[in-house]
Length: 338
Figure 1 (cartoon, rainbow, N blue to C red):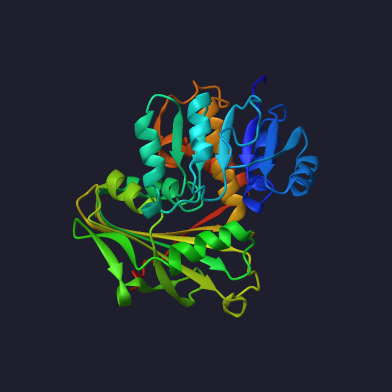
Figure 2 (tube, rainbow, N blue to C red):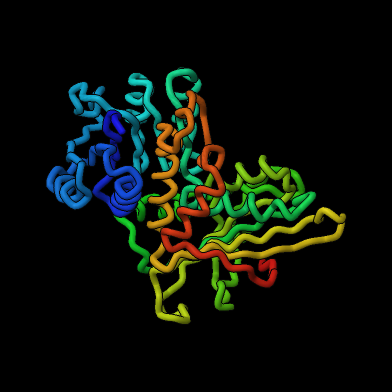
């Protein structure tokens, strides 16, 4: 396969390396550029991945410090407050995906897309674990004629591996935002004060205190399913609360309520699990989106447009790769925790 290299900005970080490994396994000949401010760290990651080169990225320069070298696509793994990487992708007419800006932070990216809507495909990738929530939820929703409620919960181990950028994102999205968006009774509302608090029941039955969060899954699934009630909550599980001593494992809890195809009330609850934490599934999602954007799946490359990841990913291919990556889906008894 002959193509220009894929630039992974922040590619030496945990999610970036996961993405690079998935791409390298599926597409050994695709060259990668591991971009970052720390050249030595990028060089170590490039050597580990193979068929990869380290490059120093400077978001303050018009060309990111790349001196015009060819690029096939850009993925960025932290919040670029300059939108420099997106503007470079548009000028070069190559696909772009970011996975960090929260729902209330996407204005600059949306504005950049609107200014040049035919320049390149732009993916707003901050779905929880980049497809690991939306793709299964839409699959479970097929059992319903009408979905009324979508309640999503995520559980992270307190030592779940993430880098400084990931900690910054989580702190910014959970502690510095005074209100979180949700949909209730068909109306978009802002959760604030005590309404930011919730509870989640984990797979092993432990009840954890949770906080409101609003990744792109909330607006995407509300729009896709027409559910009147959609919300997302996040809980951090302390090591002592984990029944099997596996603090790295992550869970996504998906509970749906509505009417089935025989017009009877139906409630379902599932868990999406990875024993190694959030990063393998996030890296998988980014890799599969890049694969689809560039047409590496033997289909035409994605045309210019503004997308969520779930709109691009083929569900069957996602589930196949999800299982190979060690992901697990369990059916649970419904609870509808507060």
